[in-house]
Length: 217
Image 1: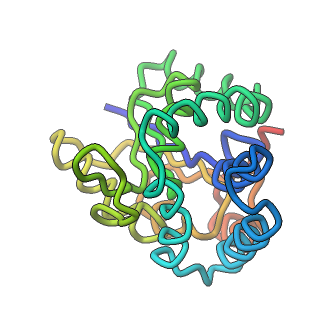
Image 2: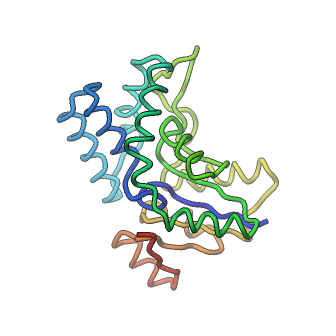
């Protein structure tokens, strides 16, 4: 069985769903827009430079989930998907997903962004399988903590190996599409790594290793 794995932000989407969620919350007056955007962009810069403390970022991001009830969160999320996510879905990404699906491949999105944000995005893209960072929930509310290993950097390898192990699969025949050097650990694990509109570090690594470099924009 062939497994086609995809990063989400800046790969299948022309943007970052974490950042877009923060912008949406600010626009709705649900957080201090200026302060939240400043922190969000600071973390995004750390991500791009390879210096992000994922647990520090998750504490920042999950604090909002922990202070609101699920009904309100789901209502806001529905609007977020319509207003912020649909406009940044890349048509050529949909074509790529359709191509792999048509070849009978199993599609899997693996993203560092949390499941609360990304589950409806995966559904929008028609991808049934999702590995995302899991916000902890207790008694029907988010706690602000993280559950298990965040699917970030080397954590993506851990989570993918757990996922395929539970299903009796392997990476013998596998693809992984990503834009970020943070995903090099998983790119090195698959049979066919593909750099998609890559950052400078990933582009250099792809050229050095003769990996395909494509654009979905």
